[in-house]
Amino acid sequence: QVQLVESGGDLVQPGGSLRLSCAASGKIFSIYAMGWYRQAPGKQRELVATITSGASTNYADSVKGRFTISRDNAKNTVYLQMNSLKPEDTAVYYCNAEGIKDYTGSFYRRGGDYWGQGTQVTVSS
Image (cartoon, rainbow, N blue to C red; front, side, top):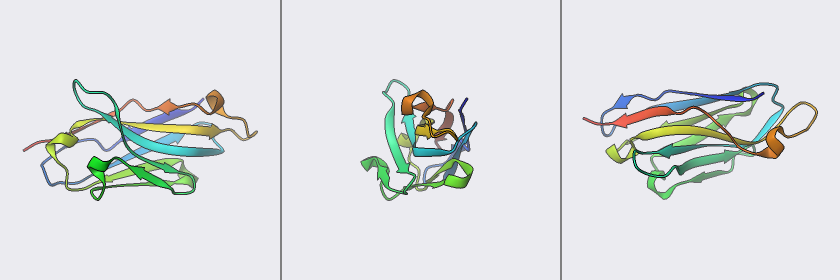
């Protein structure tokens, strides 16, 4: 089976930086896309950033220029560097992966989503 485990969430002051990591474990040959989503209290989960195995990226307008997503395909790990953090960035951040293949070339869950358990990011003075 596949598991995603996030780390790096913390309490940080406005203007500060954090780096989130998410490692996928299991019998994984490749992952098509990995990304980060967030959910603030009372709000719906929203996309933050995604990256494909070919390094194509997509960002929410609210984080463009402040956040950078990257991945290490050999380690099945995705990162989110967050700079110039604002109080409105406060949320639980979830890692997502889709299009995961095993070593036979078959998709887990027919290519569907896997989610991590979430890591809390709080931006406050």
